[in-house]
Image (cartoon, rainbow, N blue to C red):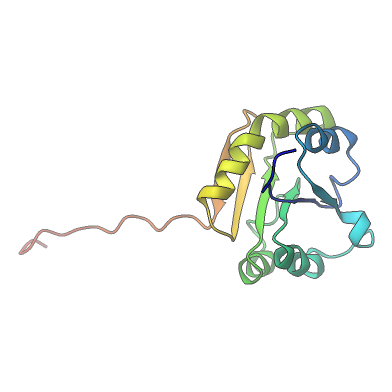
Length: 146
Protein backbone atom coordinates (compact mmCIF):
# COMPACT_ATOMS: atom_id res chain seq x y z
CA UNK A 1 0.00 0.00 0.00
CA UNK A 2 1.21 3.51 -0.81
CA UNK A 3 1.64 5.82 2.14
CA UNK A 4 0.70 9.47 2.58
CA UNK A 5 -2.16 9.36 0.13
CA UNK A 6 -5.01 11.65 1.01
CA UNK A 7 -8.42 10.33 2.00
CA UNK A 8 -11.21 10.98 -0.46
CA UNK A 9 -14.76 11.70 0.65
CA UNK A 10 -17.44 10.39 -1.70
CA UNK A 11 -20.53 12.53 -1.38
CA UNK A 12 -24.03 11.11 -1.35
CA UNK A 13 -24.38 10.84 -5.12
CA UNK A 14 -21.20 8.71 -5.45
CA UNK A 15 -20.81 6.88 -2.15
CA UNK A 16 -22.56 3.68 -3.26
CA UNK A 17 -21.15 3.51 -6.79
CA UNK A 18 -19.37 0.14 -6.85
CA UNK A 19 -17.28 1.03 -9.91
CA UNK A 20 -15.98 4.24 -8.30
CA UNK A 21 -15.31 2.43 -5.03
CA UNK A 22 -13.40 -0.18 -7.04
CA UNK A 23 -11.04 2.47 -8.42
CA UNK A 24 -10.06 3.52 -4.90
CA UNK A 25 -9.73 -0.09 -3.76
CA UNK A 26 -7.50 -1.09 -6.70
CA UNK A 27 -5.26 1.91 -6.08
CA UNK A 28 -5.10 1.37 -2.32
CA UNK A 29 -6.51 4.82 -1.59
CA UNK A 30 -8.80 5.29 1.39
CA UNK A 31 -12.22 6.78 0.90
CA UNK A 32 -14.96 7.78 3.28
CA UNK A 33 -18.54 7.29 2.16
CA UNK A 34 -21.18 9.93 2.86
CA UNK A 35 -23.85 7.52 4.09
CA UNK A 36 -21.43 5.97 6.59
CA UNK A 37 -21.02 9.38 8.24
CA UNK A 38 -24.21 11.33 7.56
CA UNK A 39 -27.89 10.74 6.94
CA UNK A 40 -29.32 10.69 3.44
CA UNK A 41 -30.17 14.22 2.38
CA UNK A 42 -27.72 15.93 4.76
CA UNK A 43 -27.01 19.40 3.48
CA UNK A 44 -23.54 20.18 2.14
CA UNK A 45 -23.27 23.11 4.53
CA UNK A 46 -23.58 20.63 7.40
CA UNK A 47 -20.96 18.10 6.31
CA UNK A 48 -18.41 20.34 4.58
CA UNK A 49 -16.97 21.61 7.92
CA UNK A 50 -16.24 18.08 9.15
CA UNK A 51 -14.75 17.00 5.83
CA UNK A 52 -12.54 20.10 5.79
CA UNK A 53 -11.37 19.63 9.38
CA UNK A 54 -10.44 16.02 8.57
CA UNK A 55 -8.54 17.11 5.45
CA UNK A 56 -10.56 14.78 3.25
CA UNK A 57 -10.91 15.53 -0.46
CA UNK A 58 -14.47 15.71 -1.78
CA UNK A 59 -15.36 13.81 -4.94
CA UNK A 60 -18.75 14.71 -6.37
CA UNK A 61 -20.92 14.94 -9.45
CA UNK A 62 -22.55 18.08 -7.98
CA UNK A 63 -21.85 21.03 -10.28
CA UNK A 64 -23.16 23.68 -7.87
CA UNK A 65 -20.03 24.18 -5.76
CA UNK A 66 -18.45 26.71 -8.04
CA UNK A 67 -21.70 28.66 -8.46
CA UNK A 68 -23.17 28.51 -4.95
CA UNK A 69 -21.73 31.33 -2.83
CA UNK A 70 -22.59 29.63 0.49
CA UNK A 71 -20.80 26.43 -0.53
CA UNK A 72 -17.76 28.40 -1.71
CA UNK A 73 -17.70 30.24 1.63
CA UNK A 74 -17.80 26.90 3.49
CA UNK A 75 -15.09 25.49 1.23
CA UNK A 76 -12.93 28.54 1.92
CA UNK A 77 -13.58 28.64 5.67
CA UNK A 78 -12.87 24.93 6.18
CA UNK A 79 -10.17 24.67 3.47
CA UNK A 80 -12.02 22.00 1.51
CA UNK A 81 -10.58 20.49 -1.66
CA UNK A 82 -13.24 19.45 -4.19
CA UNK A 83 -13.00 17.46 -7.39
CA UNK A 84 -16.21 17.46 -9.38
CA UNK A 85 -16.94 15.47 -12.50
CA UNK A 86 -17.80 17.80 -15.38
CA UNK A 87 -21.20 17.65 -17.05
CA UNK A 88 -19.80 15.51 -19.87
CA UNK A 89 -19.04 12.62 -17.52
CA UNK A 90 -22.15 10.48 -17.01
CA UNK A 91 -22.86 6.90 -16.01
CA UNK A 92 -21.05 4.72 -13.49
CA UNK A 93 -18.66 3.12 -15.99
CA UNK A 94 -17.68 6.50 -17.44
CA UNK A 95 -17.25 8.03 -13.96
CA UNK A 96 -14.96 5.18 -12.95
CA UNK A 97 -12.96 5.37 -16.19
CA UNK A 98 -12.42 9.13 -15.87
CA UNK A 99 -11.50 8.74 -12.20
CA UNK A 100 -9.01 5.97 -12.96
CA UNK A 101 -7.43 8.10 -15.70
CA UNK A 102 -7.42 11.30 -13.63
CA UNK A 103 -6.28 9.87 -10.30
CA UNK A 104 -2.51 10.41 -10.78
CA UNK A 105 -3.11 14.00 -11.89
CA UNK A 106 -5.52 14.56 -8.98
CA UNK A 107 -2.79 13.54 -6.54
CA UNK A 108 -0.26 15.82 -8.26
CA UNK A 109 -2.84 18.62 -8.28
CA UNK A 110 -3.31 18.26 -4.50
CA UNK A 111 0.45 18.50 -4.04
CA UNK A 112 0.65 21.67 -6.17
CA UNK A 113 -2.46 23.52 -4.96
CA UNK A 114 -3.25 24.50 -1.42
CA UNK A 115 -6.78 24.19 -0.12
CA UNK A 116 -9.34 25.44 -0.72
CA UNK A 117 -10.02 24.67 -4.34
CA UNK A 118 -12.65 23.30 -6.70
CA UNK A 119 -11.37 21.42 -9.74
CA UNK A 120 -13.21 19.67 -12.54
CA UNK A 121 -12.51 16.20 -13.92
CA UNK A 122 -13.20 16.37 -17.63
CA UNK A 123 -13.91 13.40 -19.93
CA UNK A 124 -10.27 13.13 -21.07
CA UNK A 125 -9.22 12.64 -17.44
CA UNK A 126 -7.60 16.06 -17.22
CA UNK A 127 -8.00 18.16 -14.07
CA UNK A 128 -9.01 21.82 -14.48
CA UNK A 129 -9.01 24.42 -11.69
CA UNK A 130 -12.45 26.07 -11.47
CA UNK A 131 -12.13 28.05 -8.22
CA UNK A 132 -10.42 30.13 -7.06
CA UNK A 133 -9.36 31.44 -10.40
CA UNK A 134 -5.96 33.11 -10.51
CA UNK A 135 -5.95 36.88 -10.53
CA UNK A 136 -5.66 38.31 -14.03
CA UNK A 137 -2.23 39.71 -14.82
CA UNK A 138 -1.87 43.37 -13.96
CA UNK A 139 -1.26 45.75 -16.82
CA UNK A 140 2.12 47.39 -16.72
CA UNK A 141 2.24 50.93 -18.01
CA UNK A 142 5.46 52.38 -19.30
CA UNK A 143 6.68 55.43 -17.41
CA UNK A 144 5.31 58.62 -18.85
CA UNK A 145 2.75 56.78 -21.00
CA UNK A 146 -0.96 56.93 -20.55
